[in-house]
Length: 562
Image (cartoon, rainbow, N blue to C red; front, side, top):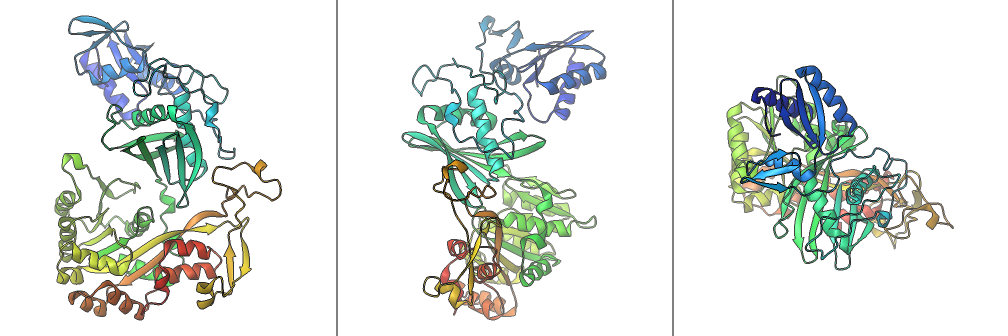
């Protein structure tokens, strides 16, 4: 917040108070302060929480508070104050000239709690939102908008804002992990990644894609004028009493900017290691290595496979007052009480390697490095392990054995790998069959050879009754029952597949000899390691997932390692 005029000390106190109390921007600025009164500018003076805030200010500073409605452009001009602009009765004083500030669309209003409920069907028809017409080409949109007043929407709310809010809210109802807003040649499609699989839910007119993209960029504090370079940002969205964080990434393309939003769920109640790893053998291995006093434990797998969640669960079990735990992450996905967490800021020069070097002077016992992507980070982490620290990190590799060869490819000497790495865990996620509509069938040895070869006599099948990815309404299914619990997908929720390699003397000797990944894996399997595929087949035997899901994420040749 930037002030305009008045007692600087009081203004500074008010600004500090607002900063502490209101984490999200509510479109508020201090306009003036005198002996008896404080004038505050607000984009939405009718906002309920603003009234409570006014009462607090009046009580704290013993002054009468008045509210003046300002536009979004005026609000931004005061905040930036880049050209020493002053707000005087709706005008900006710039270089001695009085200039009328343009009015901006209604914005910065609290999300309507009744727009969607978790028990209501998804509004699949965004065409009903009366999007504002640009009045010109898509390249140069006009400021003029047509406000659509609907009982579902907030009063006088910009339809584009409501549509974006609808897109975000639908992701909550579907329990999605990612939102893809992608402009195509003739339309803009909105896809959600639900239980690891993308589903197209919305299809918007091409002419509206620029407005949707701009709104998301404004919410993420990105540069809306920059359309040729990728950008990264974050936004917060309030739904009922919950506040969700989204990581936002833009990428220019032939037909416009694609935006992907990753939903960062911070529910620490999910961080239970015994809830993630079902089978006792792998659970005991991970727990045992996680309790080592020093060394490196590496988690590998593709993006979104749950590596960070598993590592957080290990940290959660070791989080006691006499242990100093520090993490370096990009981004910080979970907030854990009692753990110091460092956010990587690459544009400021704070990358993983630099942060890791700095925190070594912070007397850590346990260190979590969000991602090891270069030689410098890997070498620093291993040196930390050799000096009495326990290090957890993630690495891009396909399985446990290729993680070892991946480190060698980075230029890490074999002796350093063998002496510092204590274990490697590979992870994948498969969808759980829906308890409401799944069914058990006899395995056909000809059709399901993999099941037959592994002694699986009965298979669990997802009873999928969805006709296509765009249909969620039960009226489309007149002849058969539509499962409302899983939206007809046949799956609900996800399970982890785990491949856990303990670095024993045999494996360490192979590493020192620069053995290839297959040799290392064969040795580990002979010593009792269960591969990802075999772990998945055990889940199929338990009736928790399907053979199709296991085949989707695993290499079939891993069933018979030789």
